[in-house]
Each structure stands twice: as structure tokens, then as C-alpha cells.
Amino acid sequence: MKAESRLAENKYNLIVAAENACARFDHFDECMHMTEIDNGTSKALFMSLAQEMMLDENVSDNYVELLLSALEMVHRCPSKFVRLSVKSVGTDRLFHLLCEIVEKYVQYPAYCQAHASSIVQKVAKLFLHFAKVDGIKHRMAGCYEVVLSMVVVLKSGTMECSTKAEAVNLLAELAYTEDCDGVAIHVDGLVDALIECGESSDAMIREGSARAFLNLSTAMESRQILGWKDGTISVLLSYLDEVNSDDTRKCAIGALGNISACDENKLRLVNYRGGLLVEVLLILMYPRAIKNLRKDAIGVLRNLCSVDTSHILCDRPDFLMALASEAACDGDMKIRGDSLKVLRRLSVFVNATLPCYPYLVSALFNALGGAAKTRKQIVAIFREQATMIVNRPVLAQFPGLLDALGVISLDFEDSKCNAIRAILYISYLDESGITFEASEIVLTALTEAANLTKKKDTLVRFEAIKAIRQLAGKEVNRKMMLRNTSLLVALKWTVEKTAKIVTITDTLTEFFASNPANPVDIVESFLDVIDGPEDPLDKTTNIRDEDLASLAGLALARIIGRA
Image 1: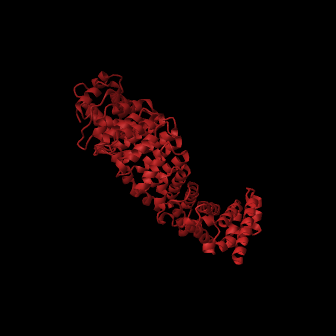
Image 2 (image 1 turned 30 degrees about the horizontal axis):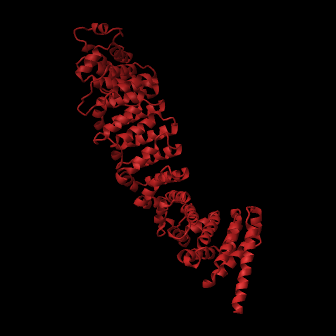
């Protein structure tokens, strides 16, 4: 009885001493905490904690809590001194001791309902102090026991929300460590525990969970694991709801961006719950959404574009129209640029063999009315689309597209080359030589381009004349061209510049009056004196005046129906 009384008295004295220590250490003066660690205070506290835990059934929960409180206070110091403290005890030994405490008070809360959650919370805070040191953080992230102990805390039904918030914050810290061969993503129950956090009413727990997912998803090997778990996508989408904090939403959209960058995830994410993910991203693109969320949402959509998913995305006119609207007139240049990138990426994977192709063309056409940079890039996309023969009939038949390209060629110097080249490609509807019926605007644009005189415009002139020659293969176009004096004079001038055969005249009547019986003889005489390839249709570089003259002569011959 005396021994028990003496033991109780000693324990009481220890508790009083610990309480006094807590009162002395409860401050945020880093210099004083550095002195405390230099004096060996932290080591003494760790030794006392280890001795107390060895008592097993006779452990004083109050004393353990006080020791952990004192340790947490002492470690409110710079990382250099945290390193010294941990090193004085031994990293592995310290990790094992703290994990043992967590296991004891989480798995067997009957020991002390009053202290269990508080004790575990202080362990988590102490681990967070350790994480200030990169080397120790690296060791913790690679320690299965440490990560598992925090997972157990999240899964516990007895731990308070404040304790779980500290645990999930620690897991978020450990989820990302540079050059870490850690095991976090592979710890049993980690992902499930983070998913369950989404059901918590505590905003801090949800935010910590979102941050943990973001950090986990930075590792390439983790992205597929996260993407193939339905619960992960579901909880991340729930974190995008407006009831959550801005930080929670930013972390969630960032995690989705990383996960969507994994090729193995793209198709699954696009098809997730009948396109729910795409629906949410479209909502986030609206101008009323947070600016950074809008950018990240467009970034996720860009990541989702692939050869397997683009046709599914383009089968949604609302999606394409939203992109076109953002690309054309959004007030933020970054968002306009990002929307254009999505449209360009979609255009790489979608062509006229797919039923959704007209939707893409319509979206691109609507974006032509946007700012100068947008217009320039959209015209370039149409040029790329026109390089594929299968697309040309759809492009030629799309209402207003050819005229729009013609107007752009006439009005905007920076887009002239791409606009003329797009018209040229579209003029070759198929390999048999069929072409489209040109409008006055298209012919005016081609005539203006053919009349250019500067050396830098040689390629544009060549492509314009080449398009005129191809369009002249259709009778209705030839009739229009024969009535277009400016076009004929432009072609004649191009031929005469090299051939030096006839004098340029001002009117169509004078042009043919030199040989009224057989106008085609004029054209043939041009071709006879040109020293160059007979049909330089495939030349795109190093074009000579002779090449232009030869092509112009062929165009004239076709216009009058003799070639």
C-alpha cells in the first residue's frame, strides 16, 4: 500500500512538473525554443515519454498528454533545431514511439476517452513540426508505419474532427516529397480514408483531403491509381461545389488536372457517369466562376483531348460553343488562349469521317469573329483542317465559311496567307479535280492576292493563282472569271512579267482583241516561251517568276476553256 502511495505521489509530482514545463514552453519565441533544444529539453521530454509508455497498463494518460504538449511547444522553432532534436533521439526510434502512442489511443480508446483524441492530435502536430525538415519529411513519407498511423486516425469513429484535421494535414504534407521513394499511395486504406473525408461536415478536413489528393497526383505513378477509383473522382467533384472554400476547390481542380494528364485515364474520365465531369467543367468555365478555377477547368479539358476522347467531346455542341465563346470574346487573354488550345487539340483528332465534325466546324467558324489573335489562330486551324481531303467537302459546303476566309484575306494582312491557302486546299474537293462554286468575295480575294507585287508575297500569289486555275475547272466559275477584268489582267500581268510577249491592256476587250479569232493562241504563246516546269502545282518554296508565269498561263488557258 505504501509502495502504491509512493508511486502515486511520484506520478503526481511528475504531472505537476510537466504542467509547469507546459506553462514555461507555451510561447512562440523561436529563440527561446532554440535555447530549450540546445539545453537538451526535447531529448529529456522524449526519454520521459518513452519510459512512461513502457509502463503499459499503468500509463498516466494525463502525463502523456502533458509531455506531448510540451514537446509540441518546444518544436515551434526553425527546421535546423528540429533536426537537432530528432537526431538526438534517433529518427526510427522516435517514429516508432509516436506511432505506438497513436495505435494505443486510437485502437483502444477505452483507456481514456477524455484524453485519447487530444493525445493523438498532439502527435500529429509533432509530426507536422518534423515535416519542416526536408530530410525528416522524406523519411516520414517513406515510413509505412507513420502514414498508416494517420490513416487509422481518419478511419476512427472516436477521434474528434480537430484531430482528424491535423492527421489529414500531415498526410497532405507527406503525399508529396521530391525524389521520394515513399509508400504513401500504396498504404492500405489511404485513398479510401481520404475519400471518406468528403463526407465530413468539417471544412478543414475536406480541404486537407483535397490537398492530399493534389499532392498525391503530382506523382506519375499515382495518377492511374487515383483515376481508376470511382470514389476519387466523385469526391473531387464534390469538392468543386461552392459550399467549399476557394482553396479546397483549387486543390480539387488541380488534382483532376493531374489525373487527366494520364493517358490511361482520359477515356474513363470523359465517360464518367455519362459525362458528369465534363458538365461540371463547363459550369466552371462560366465567367462568373473564380478566375483560377476557370483556367484550371479549361486545362483539364485540354488534358482530356485525345484520339480516343475528342470525338466524344465534339459530340456535345454545348461544349464546343462554350469553348468558341471563350476563345472569341473572353475578357481574359489567358483564358482565350487556353480555349484556343483546346479547340486546336480537338481539331487534330477529329475529321469529317465522324458525325460530330460539323459541330467542330461550327464552333471554329463562330470563333472567327473574335479578337485578332483568336482570328489568326482559327484561320490557321481551318488551313490545317483543309489539308485533309476528307474534310474539304464539309468545309466547302459550310454556310459562309469560304466567304469569311475571303473577307479575312482582304481585310487582315496577318491572316492572308493562311486564308488563301485554306481556300486553295478546299478548291481540290477530291482527287478527281472537282471543285466548288466560287462566290464574288472568294474571287475578289484571290484576285487581290494574285495582284501582290512584293517579293515576300510570292508564295501567296502562287497559291492564289493555283486556286484560280483549279476553280476554273468548273464552268460556272469560268463564266464569272471571264467577266472579271481585274482577275484576267492580274493573270496576264503575271505572265507578261516574264514572257514579255504582249502589252498589258486595261480592258478585257483589248486583251482579246489582239487575236479575236483564237484567244487561246495568246495563252499558248505565253507558255511556249516560259522556261520552267509545265505544271508547277506542287511547288511551295523557292518560287521563281517563271513558275508564276507558267501557272498564270495555265489558269488563263483553263478560264477560256482551252485547257
